[in-house]
Image 1 (cartoon, protein in one colour):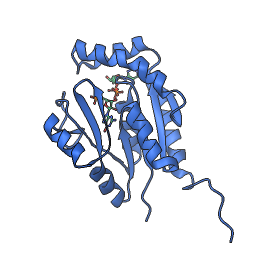
Image 2: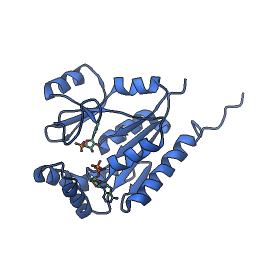
Image 3: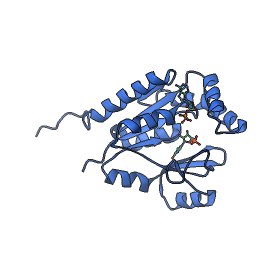
Amino acid sequence: MNKGKLLIFSAPSGSGKTTLLNHVMANIPEMAFSVSATTRPPRGEEVNGREYYFLTMEEFKQRVENGEFLEWEEVYPGRCYGTLLSVVAQMQEEGKHVAFDVDVCGGVNIKKHYGEQALSVFIQAPSVEVLRERLIKRGTDSMEEIENRVSKAEWETEFAQGKFDRTIINDDLETAKREILEVVTSFLNAPESNRPELDF
Ligand code: ADP
Ligand code: 5GP
């Protein structure tokens, strides 16, 4: 059975990962989004089961104990996020490719798990200043949350070096959209494996 391919997007918050992932999803109908679980409250127009499964810390810990996560991280202090095995399994059964929006540690772990079947992409804003500006303009987080995210961004960018298959600098949005679509399409169209055929 074709279990589909995996597309991993990681980036510091505010880099434009959601914007670019939405662009990919809109253009590749066979791609399904892995809805993560989180302990952070919904923001803006977010809906339970669409952007995230919003859980209390107790519910989240229970699922960790039950072994329900492919991976999980405390991405920000007191804010846990995790990929549910059941969500990925369901989409794979439907024959879909699966896209993940996860932090850099989650991205590296998922890539390790799936190897060649996965493409890991790191999205980067042109600078920390631009990142802060975008988060302020987005208007969905308090200044305290924004400073938490900005101060983590440098560490995340450093951590990501050499650990992802591709890095895309999201400076001009139209250019980044074009680039991401090219990268993803060529990955999806590539043969399952580059291993030579075994010749018995
Ligand atoms: P992330 O998912 O990485 O946190 P978003 O996709 O929410 O980031 O983008 C953060 C904000 O920056 C959003 O308001 C988005 O519209 C804006 N944005 C994204 N890419 C660009 C870009 N290339 N130029 C200017 N603004 C952008
Ligand atoms: P936000 O609160 O802005 O939606 O997400 C904060 C960070 O958590 C982002 O970097 C996002 O990619 C990451 N994240 C979302 N879901 C998961 C997940 O399931 N696992 C991990 N490791 N990180 C996640």
